Length: 204
Ligand code: FES
Image 1: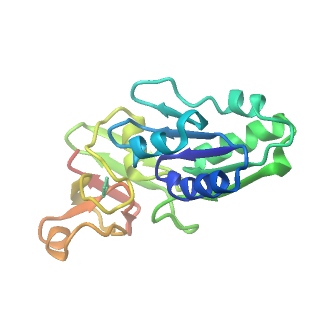
Image 2 (image 1 turned 135 degrees about the vertical axis):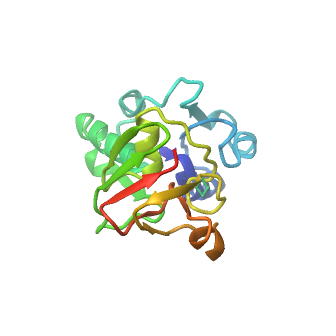
Image 3 (image 1 turned 180 degrees about the vertical axis):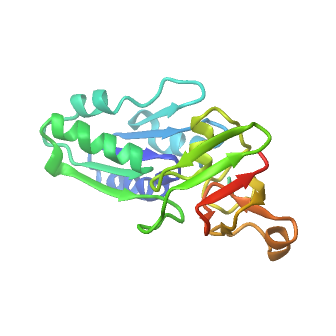
């Protein structure tokens, strides 16, 4: 049983290829925000056919981890890669269905470090404040309170989520922005970058 969330599809897809080449029976459950943002969706669908199930948060239905684990064969080994929330949900569901010892996981958290601290972020244009937990990105926290930010790669490589910093000091972890964009334009990629100060104010 392969379960991938977002860009976690990268290693899971390679596993699917290896299992297919070996003739091993498997199913791949792939959850992402939308078909539009999904890496290689069409290609994977062609490669895997009915072994692939996709779930898009924007249009639904969402991946029901509980149902997937409940329906898994009793000896299934579960491989999961994706955001911490997905991995935690798989571990919890596996524990309820006697599969705790058969879960293998890889946490894909771009730019995340164990030492990450919470950040208090003020969204100046929206007149909102949001507390970013250490286990989530600024982008995730902002989206959680319903503020929409354009985003694509969500791993700091495309620059779509670049946001102007109005106060505080960002800790840049992206690979998209130039030094001029960071220093002169005052932008940060909120999908991966964090803060060197406990608070940030963003032009959102
Ligand atoms: S969404 Fe691509 S850099 Fe943030």
